[in-house]
Image 1 (tube, rainbow, N blue to C red):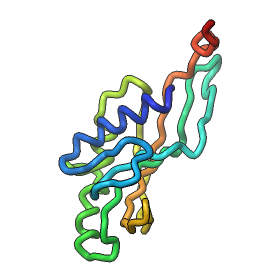
Image 2: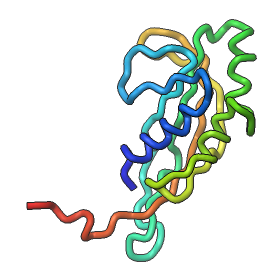
Image 3: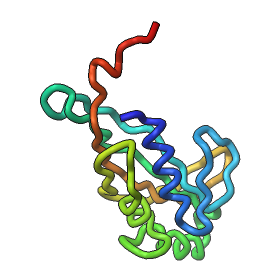
Image 4: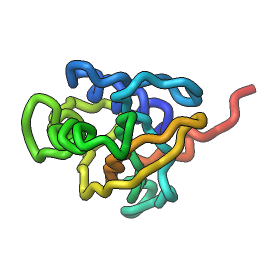
Length: 144
């Protein structure tokens, strides 16, 4: 699996949620509500015999909403954390037809107050597990 390809497809899946901004990696200023794709906690290689599969056991997708202490923000984040529905992050991510990986699952979510580029946000942090085809040794050969 290629991390950039997986992240690009996750961005496309999240962009199916109306009104959710999905900035490019490294964007400093974001417009709330926004979804940011993080880096995996680790990469597990060779999950099956002979480079059969690789796995990202915990790749975060973070939905950020401004004004974390405002009661309306709590109500506004709820549709993103629903298991299904037009704003459901879980549904959007799991329904997408990926070509860069084989299986994408949203395993769990948590809430946290975070600061991004000096602005406070209420965050819903979704934890994804992703499995895909490992690169063969031929794919990894340096080119001349």
